[in-house]
Image (cartoon, rainbow, N blue to C red):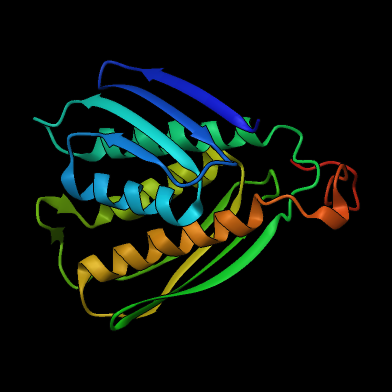
Length: 197
């Protein structure tokens, strides 16, 4: 079973994250941030990764610490669950429409963390959620998962749709990239013979 549980406790947040890469998309998420919970639910559903997130953060200050720290913990959990990465598909590229918005998400489970994020939000907020935190979450997730991740919104007008297309795009890219390739079972998908470095 490709599963992992990560606990992260700081003076700002207390977080527990569990993942099952071979799940069915079950989501059990409670961060105290409604919009963020919605995005994590979408991530689970469309990636088919079972995701549990229980987060208690300093929301009386703002949503930054909780959003970033969940990204850190979830990235670490995915990395741990991938183990030695033998047999994974590794690469995936997705175009994700959401009404008037279209985003492209490309992933390489390389062990070399890089985020390229190109999405512009017309307004600063989605409800009470700061739109700048979308990038913060993607950066925390990519760096801690050890993946190369390119996210680009090609066009879009609605803040909610832009964020949702990015999260759904990541979900579908992860679903494809973490899948075991039956033609390469037991092999590390790299000419180096190793991933990560």
